[in-house]
Image (cartoon, rainbow, N blue to C red):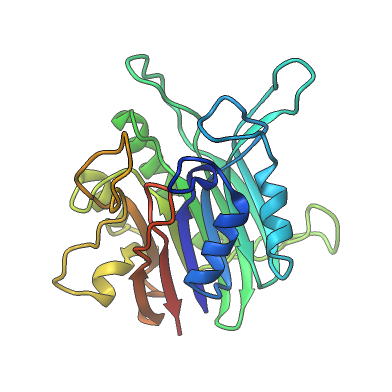
Length: 283
C-alpha cells in the first residue's frame, strides 16, 4: 500500500495562486496513493495570499471519488458578515474502509510572545490488505517551541492510549455509539512536524515507552540508513521563502509496523508549496 503526506499550503502553485485542481493533479502525478495525508487545507478564507475562499475539503473529496474523505479542523471560526465559516486543518483520503475517526485537539499552552493557532491530530483506523492500521496526520506548531514540545508529548500519550485500546478491547454495546469499534495497534504518523531531524522533539517522539508500547520510528533511516534526510522544505526558490532547504516533514511508523516499510521517497518537483510530498510504501 502507498501512503503520501504533503503540506499543500492551501493548494499553492509556483505563481503563488491557489489551485486545488492543480494540487489534485500533482497528487495523482506523484503516485496512485491508497492513503493521502494533507495539511493546510482551507475553506472560506479570502484574506490569505491566493485564496478565493473555496471549500478545498469538498473539492479534494470530489477530485478523489474512490477515496473516503476524512476532515479534521484546527480552526473553525465565523466568516466575514454573511460569508461562509473559515475552516483550516488536515485531511485524510483513504481508498480503504475507514472504521473509526478520532479528532484530537493538541495542547495549546499560553505563549503570548509569538503567533500560534490550535493544532490537531487527525486519526483514522483503516481496514487495509495489511490488516488494521491507524493513520494519524498532524501539523505541529511552528512559532512556539513550548507548544510544539507539549504537542509531541501528547502524540506519545495518544500512541500509548491507542495501543492499550487495541490490546484490551473495551466492553461495548451491540450497536450505537457504545459499540466497540476497533482501534488499530499498528500505526503511521505523518505530517509537517515543524521540528528538525536530531532535535529534542524528534528524539522525544521516538523514545521507548516503559510499558512495552511500540515506539514510533522515523521511516527515513529505516530505508536510508546512514543517509541524511532529504530536505522537504524550500527546495525551490520562490520570492519571500528562505534560501536554505531543510527537513520538517516526516513519516513515522510504530515499531511493529517498521518491518513493512518497503520504500520512502521524496517527490522533488516544483509543485508550488514550500513543502514536498513524501511517499511511503508498506509491503
